Amino acid sequence: MFHEIRIKELKPLNLEGGFLIDGFPSAGFSSAIATESMVHTSQFNLAGIIDSDTFPPISIIKDGKPNYPSRIFVNEELKVSVFLSYLTLDQSLHKVTAKTMLKWAQKHKIGLVVSSIAVKSPDGGEDLIGIGSTDSARERIRSAGLKVLEHGTVPGIPGTLLNEASITGQDVIVIIFHTNGEGPDFKSSAQLCLAMSKLIPGTSCDISALNQEAEKAQTVIKEAQEESSHLKDSMYM
Image (cartoon, rainbow, N blue to C red; front, side, top):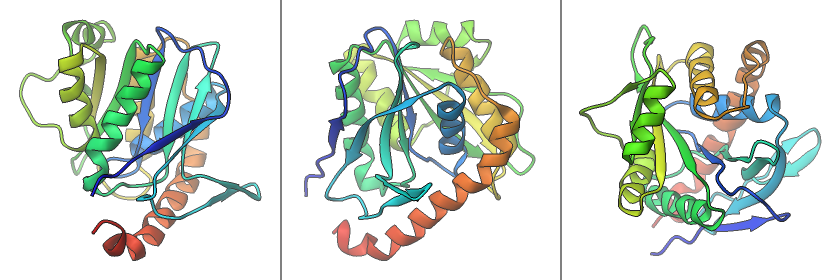
């Protein structure tokens, strides 16, 4: 079965030479929480929705208003776009999601795509590691003061982004960060948000606000995950 993902833009966008952040949750919720923190801190506006007939039929209610669970936010001044999602996607959707993201990045002539993946460690880790799809992406990692991964494996949407972009020449960076995998991991969310802000000029993270909002964001993501799990078996067959 072919899983089509549709993107509907709500207004014209000028992102040439800019950035795209992958905010789909990976292991745990830190990537989604860090991305949401950046959206709220750096004055992003809703610019589009991401939807599919294979996505769970869920509406996220915030401030009394219904929202699609996967949306695009843009800061036009900084030329930064974010694919922000509350959905933890089934792995059958990982490849098509990554390819859709790269096709959209190509359409808007995005210079750099930034994604992330969590590695569980009981005590957390201090060092953030980056992986680049191209030589220029790897140089960006070093310039930001991060280590470059020499050997390892990257699963899911981030892994597909790296593979596809290595062929097309699109700059993609995947940040590997550590999380304890328990509760709203403020520390890993803050580390990831700060690492993204080093790679993307002009963006910032309000750490105190992140700590306050992390638990709320995790609650919404978990609710969406639990609601969608009831539909999962019938939807992905």
